[in-house]
Length: 158
Ligand code: SF4
Image (cartoon, rainbow, N blue to C red; front, side):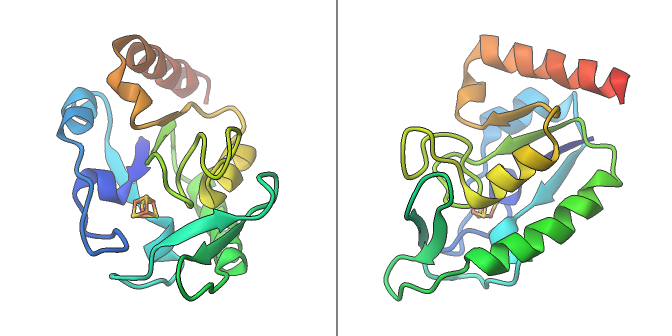
């Protein structure tokens, strides 16, 4: 079973009430996986629509803060993530696709060159061996094939 960010599957969960349905990604993976959508910002209790957020501070321990009113949701997100990751451990996950450029879900280059979204960071350190990828990188055929291979290898071993 594979997980994916909800906005990529067409759920209207983004801060502006929209989605980021990625037809290309969905079509490329539909025949290989069962999608199970996850949206950290909505599931941790922030509404739709909501104020856009960004990461601030040091890239090793950034804060998740609203862009205009400066509300810090870091603790809320981390608390939710801890419980969610324990739940996800009970499921048969084989891989996870993250939405790029998100302060919660971005896997690469959020805030800084090595920056990573708050949930993506928690996920990656909890499931250290699970294949994870950034949706944008999966447009590259080589990266996509290698990710699918990794998913199958992971599935065989676990
Ligand atoms: S990027 Fe992540 S937190 Fe933002 S809407 Fe998509 S799934 Fe939710």
